[in-house]
Length: 115
Image 1: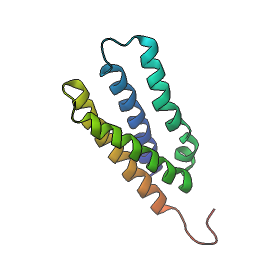
Image 2 (image 1 turned 45 degrees about the vertical axis):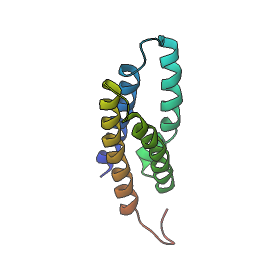
Image 3 (image 1 turned 180 degrees about the vertical axis):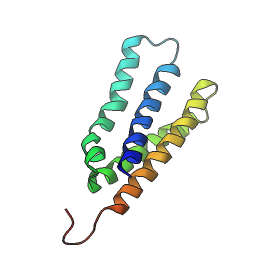
Image 4 (image 1 turned 120 degrees about the horizontal axis):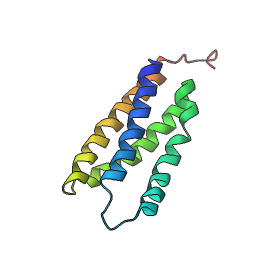
């Protein structure tokens, strides 16, 4: 289960990085692309401890953040060309990550003895 969660997290990060680099407007320079990447990736990297240690509240918060990213991907689904294709791939990867987080949280113990 933990490997499934970690791999889905890494795959989502890779898909997000690739879609930002490949689908960037041709008029933007490399520095602009790096700024956009930093704004997208840094919030996701804050949850690396929650993913690696399978912490329930961190995984639930990550799910909410991924839902925000899914909103942006949904808007990009109405674009044309490569941006649209990568938007659909982002949505699939985000759905996979949300399902992995939900499955991991569900497998954790509940109640007074839970850590």
